[in-house]
Length: 323
Image (cartoon, rainbow, N blue to C red):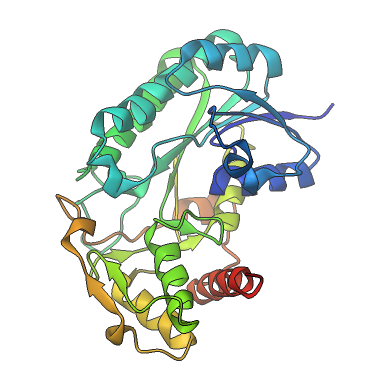
């Protein structure tokens, strides 16, 4: 019998890569998408994939229950979220409803309709916030001191998953994923913003790139590597929580230097700082220790930071070459 996977956020970066990966393993892949007036744009990452979709929303309990009853999944991947950290300060109520109450809605539907399934929650390194262990890493045992509505909402989601696991004996696990990117990343996220902007400048289509904090450090990996980790987490006999990260950290400034340099440009001549892109409370540093998942589940990332950036550069060059 084919396993059935149910994915929220299926039309996003991670959802699309996870769908492709599960299809390659022989899964039946299902999911929900929010209604959008421009359907083609909404589903462009998953266009042509043999997946089953229904309309739904994390804050609409009825739609989640309807989809669970229809699809009867063996594995549930809750990837849906308001995922932009900076924008979470502009729309904090929606962020909390989606990222906190949305997880509770999913868990309750899971508990009452398909309690023998396995549940994966997309937790985030932003939950750690300003807390860093003495050795400069963040791991499963690091305290959580989030510094944004996004981070705060994700802490609730993380903890309500742990509660349901312990209280109702469900297979419910958290993947605490550090920053992961790809050509499919939205262009208002910092990596794709930098790459797209640099390619536009190299082609004479723009003359500057406005950025926020250039000296924030992040641990960047590739979404393709991280969806493999999600799947691995649900293949275990016992539900546990895992940090997924490369263990390497670079600043936004270093990323700009690399990307512009690959295009033969000096980033300092084009990049300016605009205060509107700064967070109300900045998060200066994230670096993950993924020893647990590497040791116990044998997960190893295949992409380096340089491979990731090169692929994203090539993606935007190809797009503009066809225009």
